[in-house]
Image 1 (spheres, rainbow, N blue to C red):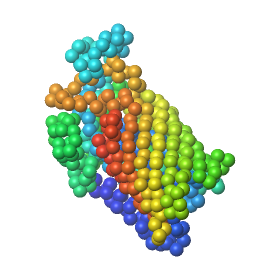
Image 2 (cartoon, rainbow, N blue to C red):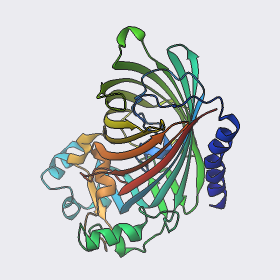
Image 3 (cartoon, rainbow, N blue to C red):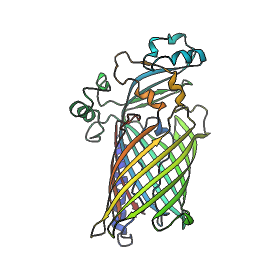
Image 4 (spheres, helix red, strand yellow):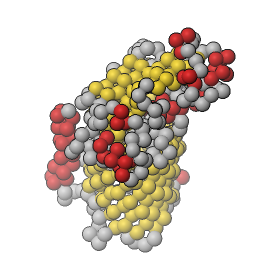
Length: 402
């Protein structure tokens, strides 16, 4: 854990050292389109492979730009063993009952079924470093490194994402006393255990740190689809996953659009929309990769709204709202007949870790940034439909020229 925070300290310190050395050559502002660092939710499955998000820049970067971000996300799901019947007659019988009642109508020890097990607890910390390099006038390449750690979420390193803060919020403001049975177990613990249908197991313990992967993306900004206030770019994505649980290559494509709405010389708004699809594990680099979801393709849609104001000293302040939705990790049809078995001491919302794998994940993100020679962004993220595992996620990012 000490090593992880040493990495974080050095990464955060670097842009300010670089800024002090190059102050006289950096342009007045580096803002380019809608200010948005990586805001992907730190899903316990999603940290093991690439996922796509919108690129709301208006033009290819003119200089090499580095973005460093830190994310903190509280994830929770009590232990659940899930059976997927192979027999069609058993599936039809299971469809007669609600998913949480099926365990009382079947003897799972006699079932011919596939099985997976999942238990989630902790705060996932991600460090992401994105380097954008100009290729030509209207093309750029972005190389990104993903580093992940599982923390127990104790303060002061996890203020808003700790179990204690979240359960205090539920008890005193919204949700009621222990609405997700988190207090059945000890608070501020860490551990993720997942056994897939092939019997392969991923197990993360407190302070486990690993390199999740490297992503390479090429963006093309076609001039013939651009005018003064309307911008489009197209991305092709290649993700190399490097963890011991999933060593593979993902391939994807996205299209992104930004509309600028000027009000006067110092105030304007921007609207962004993005659509894309990813082929998970398009190339397997080892035989025993875990199955992190049965959907081979993940599609996403993202929209963003930003208001910007420029101060008299040239600093741009922005506030933005972003909505992101992604297709389910598992094939949704299975939800009609899976047979989840709950932990005997857990009764409320006990199946969220499993059933959410069959639902489209979606969440809202509120962002604030200020930009001149360095861009600093803070955000908070919440899933209002409870279809995504992170209970709450926060992030901070810095962007600067190198």
